[in-house]
Length: 140
Image (tube, rainbow, N blue to C red; front, side, top):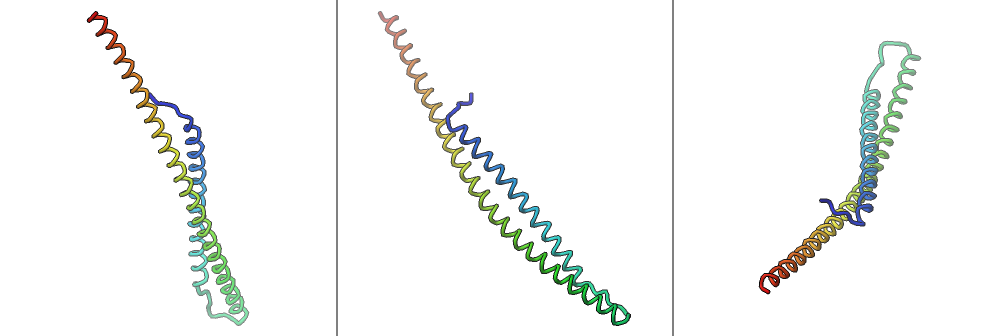
C-alpha cells in the first residue's frame, strides 16, 4: 500500500526538473564530442602538407589553403572551449536539480514512514481497546 502525501506533487515537479536538466546535460556533452571531432579534423587538415613540385602560383594557393586550415583549427578550438564551458555550467545545474529532487524525495519518504507508523499506532490502540472490552465482557 502506497501512502500518498502532499509532497508527492513536489517530488514529481523536482523529478521533472531533474529529467530536463539531465537531457540538457546529455545535449551539452554531445556538443562537446562534436566540437572535439571538429578540432581533430581541422588539426589533421592543418598538419597535412599538399605542396608538390609546381610553379609559384600553386605554392601560393597551397600556402593560403594552409593558413585557412590553421584559422579553421583555431576557430574549432574556440568552439570546443565554449562548448566545454557550457557543459560545465549545465552539469552544475543538473547536480543542483538532482540534489533538490533527492532532498524532496527523502522528506516525502520520511513523511510517508511517519504516516504509516501513525496508522499502525492507531490500529494497535483500537485493537487494544477491543481486546480490553472483550476481556471485561468475559470477566463480567
